[in-house]
Length: 228
Image (cartoon, rainbow, N blue to C red; front, side, top):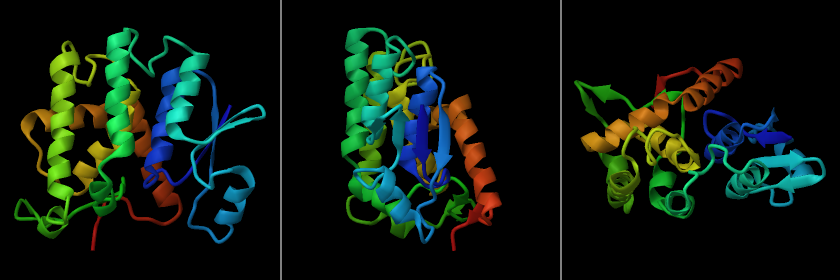
């Protein structure tokens, strides 16, 4: 299988698609298509019926949505780490992932994922009050934390992730959100911060972030430079 991805430092959906592929345990390779190049739109139009990435190719079959990619891989490797093994937990995991898939439009627009920059902090205080004050952002930050809290209260015993010790696709769906909170110095409640830290420390997420930093250096983006 081949997964077409975008820039690792900024493409949330290709990060999730890649994590789904890794969680499946199935062999795959990646091909990067940077969307900022002059010929990017033409190249993308030639391979993607939706004009979007990621795209997973398995022979002649093209899967064009991250959620569909995860479900396809689960069908190919049932029992893999994409979803919890128990049906009630698996249903709850799909619900959690679905909330991230469909909501938080204002928050996502205000805080684009950027894995190689950090919001500046002066004297220990982040200078992001205007950012957090944009319409809809603060309530959505609160809802993200409550969603994590509710899921972990029911399913998270025995480990740091939403469903305990096993990192699954629900956690992968939230990983870019956890990275946003780190990038933009968003203050979180202690339990939400602990979950975000656990997600960002997971070996697969850390591998993606390291790849993002290496890719950014390769094309001339200075890693961990503060936003202007």
